[in-house]
Image (cartoon, rainbow, N blue to C red; front, side):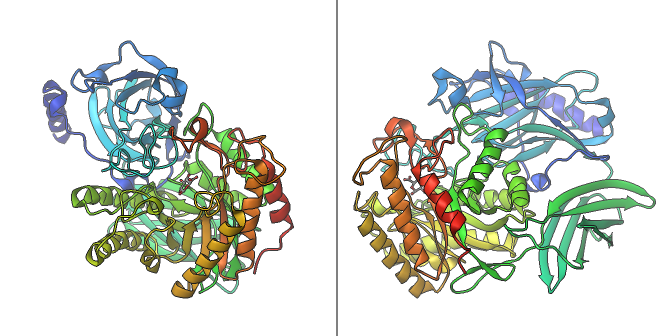
Length: 627
Ligand code: BDP
């Protein structure tokens, strides 16, 4: 009866045309586990060439383009449309993507999902002309069930409408009146607003009767015994199951009993191998759902046992001080744009290790999931950052509330997706948020005490949410030059982006180093927290040299980086230095962005080392870990 009723409603909706279509919003919980292929689950990657069509007047929905695109062109998925088409570099309005696929017969009787790993910025999905759902927000996955809409023994048409309209109500923000970053397209951030299906689109299936919906593994250890606090959530009423933790010749099995769909147990691992950059030792955690004798579902993930904490001066990994050496990065590469290109990712890990780096921040958005799996295995630590860049609290409460809502959604999506990776040691809730619409260092807007407090309270919500979702990791934000200092009261680690000697006192490295040194001293004295410089650097045009230090040369960039690293070395409480940037990257057009690029990379955009990269390799590889 229920099925028939749903079908009738759907038929009515379809008959009523597009205007009546009500596309539900995605539920962040549905992306908690990476889709996997095993004996109980299936996965079909729809990467490839899709049909593509521009919809500049936004008529596609009304004209029911979800019933099949006419006069389309071909586009690669994953990839950004701005790089693939010469006429669409700056186009950010509506487009349609379409592909067709059979769904294997063997999936019959299972629950079937579509998972879009990144549709920047907003997307709506139809399958076989039926409205499936929608999502807002960039660089995070979303998923919907498809069972009501699919056909067996025939191709299924998947239509996705995407747009990347820049708006002050969105995060990241764009088209902000009076922005201190005049550029085109008018992104309120310093990277190109690459749009489209930047990551893979998957279909996957899970057992219909009951399936494992989420697994949260919280690691700890005491002496030589590892402790994994494992929380399993199922979608069904299976009563029991087990958790198997295996690795290094050991296997520990713990039975679990579900209550209201949840089961929680602590698995102890004797003679535990701890995860660290030097020993990136991983365990397999397998969860099995059992209905009597029968296994109903099974899911395995790789994780590691390690703890993260802070003292007044240090970040501790497994109780020992660590120093973060590394970079801010981008998912950016010629032609791929922001599209995931796995060979580029692998090469980036190679090059990070070649320089002697041990960490990076996912500036300025969560990266493709593969980065985190790779970092777990390679022993690279990650600061996982939300897409909250260019965020501001200037007093327009309607806009602020909308931004706040999307930021909270991002926090759920990022932490649900990335919570089990030992490589992720900190969450960064925002890059350079400000209490003014324009960036701190160029604005003279004065705020009243009450306005400042209001902004502080709003921003505090981000920390509360991150801590509530994950009490095991450090939470930080990254402060902008001349931004509000009192916000550092909220953070576990003081992280600042500084460009003294570049944007201020340009050309004067000595003065720049002096200023940052003094500022770090003051911050530490006031807040008594470990400090890190999450961005510092200078543009260098590849192959541009000079005898005497001159801005934009490779020599200047190298000396700038050296001076800042020296400042850090002379201070016990500086616990990490991340250079901006790993590689040159594409930006909007602006007078400070020659040819539409940010040249602060120590590697070129096609990953050739500049002088600074060679310098880092020498310095970082010869350094004993700072203790
Ligand atoms: C910082 C931003 C970063 C920019 C960098 C720069 O966090 O996104 O690319 O400045 O100006 O303020 O190079």
